[in-house]
Each structure stands twice: as C-alpha cells, then as structure tokens.
Length: 128
Image 1 (cartoon, helix red, strand yellow):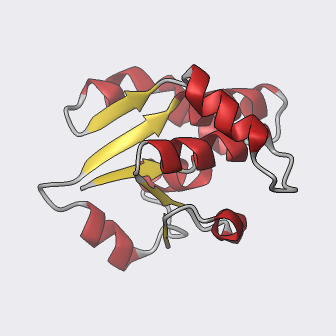
Image 2 (cartoon, rainbow, N blue to C red):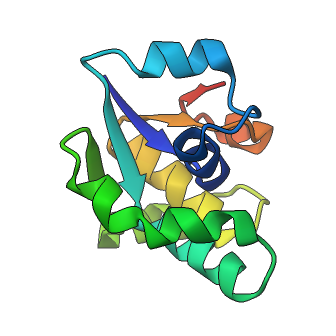
C-alpha cells in the first residue's frame, strides 16, 4: 500500500519523534508499504528551515538524498494536473503546500499520513 506524507509526518517519522504514533509506525513499517514523498513537502521544509521556523527539519533535508535512495521511498513531482486541481479547490484553506498535497493525494489515490485535521474538510483520504 502507498502512503503520502504531510511534511510534519515525514519529519517525525524519519526522526523517530514521539509525536508520530507508535501504532501507526508499526503499521506503516510492514513489508508491503511504499512511502511517497512529495516535492511540495521538500519545498515546504526547505522554506521553513531557511526562514528559521522549523530547524528540526534541517537534518531531514540534509539526508533526503540518502532517504530517497531507499527503494521504499518514491519521490512525487508536482504535475500540471496537481497544480490545476490544487488551484481550483473551493476549499478556504490558503496554504499552497497543503493544497498541493491534497490534490496529489486525490489524483494519485494515495492516503495522506497527517495529524492535520484540515485535510478531512475536502475529502482527502487521511490516516492518523
């Protein structure tokens, strides 16, 4: 099964942070799980690290090439269709990173791993 990470979930998962639920970690670490990392997550992390708003994401960014070299992690670029759908959402939430992730989750039919309840407001498949 494939799972798309929201930015905070990716950082917490990779760092082994206690904020990532233990039961969910066990479920995701099964042999048949494929993790998808959106370019939007990397963009968001890099932006927030640069601005000094999320220093804990810095080590994840520094190690991202090694993470993506693993066969269980798949990068997901932002396509024209992702951008079109994200821009057309009637959803009031203005965060462009969240809008892209929601569009990617829906278009690619991948469950989004996130603690952010805002994604449930417009039908994105969410786990957490």
